[in-house]
Length: 105
Image 1 (cartoon, rainbow, N blue to C red):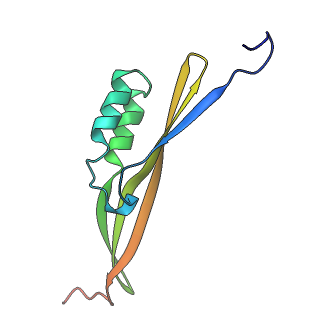
Image 2 (image 1 turned 135 degrees about the vertical axis):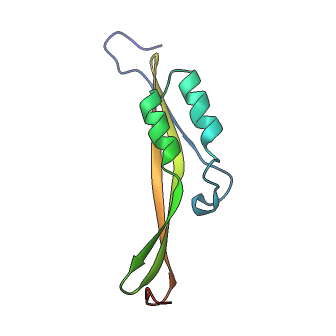
């Protein structure tokens, strides 16, 4: 039991997918994000942004073609008193897929 004026304990939990972050499918976090919204722990605008982050883009540079995978690495929940806060941690993986790109190829 804590005396008045003492700090309250805080519990942090990190939630990961059971595979490497760069191997998860773009929709893999959808059910968790929806559940966080149901509990009121995640504002809908933030949840939508978090759900839209995972995607794959292709970029054409002077020195090659690149594939950029944007994924979620993990989600952290912090329980402090009656409050719950949630953070999503984004990740990117950039790989060159070919050598120099030419519009005539």
